[in-house]
Image (cartoon, rainbow, N blue to C red):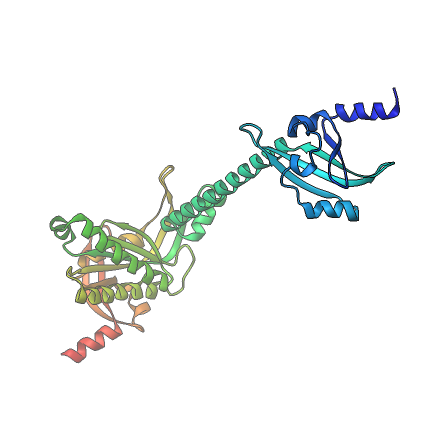
Length: 352
């Protein structure tokens, strides 16, 4: 067997489609079986551009005249499935004339795998974004349930160590006649009203460096001095209390539903921790919380009551008046004071 016959047999046996055309008119000189299987057997006199539609004739001229290589991907659809081929066309010189060699490789499977990888990557990216959004929602929810420092401890260790805070102050607000209001008002309206009011309270609490701990029905509880120590914790909760009442007064001027509230302040020690295993909630309890809860009962509507021990911490910034001693359940006899802002007190004097 001659060398040329051996080479021709090799070209017919390999899995790459090969064809040779004349450079002058692009007519076929040779093609192997894979080429014919993919693109059909070229008829006598057929040109390369008639068999392989979609080739750029300008690029073919560059191959012919400048000797550059032309690489392109072609798609054909012999049946239902689309096949993708990578073509490399280069010029060569035979003994008699200039020729062009076309190498074709079926890369359909490669492109399908690349498409699958791209789809999988897109799905992973989408799921990652969704997980990040879900993580942010969970974080926002937990930050609504507990202070950030407590959340960071919970996120890092999975538990929160109960902590005793020796010097904190508490503000406890409760609405007057809320039960009657809720009974005669549509529940949607009641919830909408509470949501608006508590949202405003949250902004006030944040403004004065306090931490809203929880709402219990119509009651609102916030603290200062925990989890981060605050030297002026007493004045912080007093500022919150006076701003609560000022907000309600202004709201009542323009809303059909009139809200009246009683506020109690407490100071002393408190314990803070996450309570629950499956349903988490950050809660505080102790003498300061008990005091604020008990004293708000002794407040008149739209008034603030505090223990006398807070008097000297508040007297420089607030109007403080003695109310006398009261026997309070769980606390014994406690001397109480009424607290109001200096602005409110000066206004009341000017009106009399």
